Length: 304
Image (cartoon, rainbow, N blue to C red; front, side, top):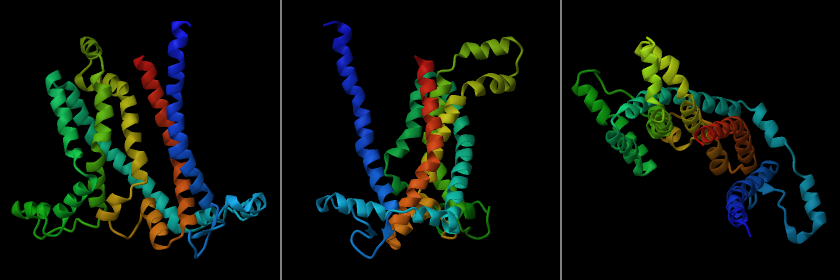
């Protein structure tokens, strides 16, 4: 047996693992969610009909399948509650991603320009705060932003405000929590891209008479676009479905789709509509997911 065949077989088995993972932990659960989204709400346990019972035979399964419908999806496009929830989620995700890019890019750029031994320390400073629990960090922000919290105490002590400012239950608090929580997801891919950049390119641009600003916009920024794209998608995709931060920090006047899903599942017990909303959310995220996969492939091909 040749050496190529000896190593090809384990490699083939190893390649099966991610497909099995995808089938067991994504496709199978998604199949259940899709089936529930085509069902009808019922006062029963489980709270939907029909229920496929394999013990009743093929005829019963066929009769149950005939009861499936697209009514829940029609409701989603006819009710402003769901349309506005999707729109708010997309707007919040887009604005948050833009803020994250504006804050994360200078930080990543500065980290990449540090001496080598300081870069690892800067990396730790970015990551270490996120070793604590996500919920604890969000509840800490609640204490900081409340009426007599640390932020208002500092503003009053500096005489920047005459009275405590209402921060909690506002969009400002929500954006603050989102930016704080997702900042490492923007910084790390940007830093990885900027740190790999060949300094000789910047020296060549300088030797040819380009100013530092021209060098940045004509050399540095175009070469960092793969990191910008990866960071933007790593932040945008999970923010669209975010539930905890808007639920704890934002007001209740307008809901993101994650809050609407929670409301349908746990308050209204309307599993079919909630499942349909989840399916539509996944469809909306297919395009950015495919774009992220394409960027990852380009980066892998470029580094090989």
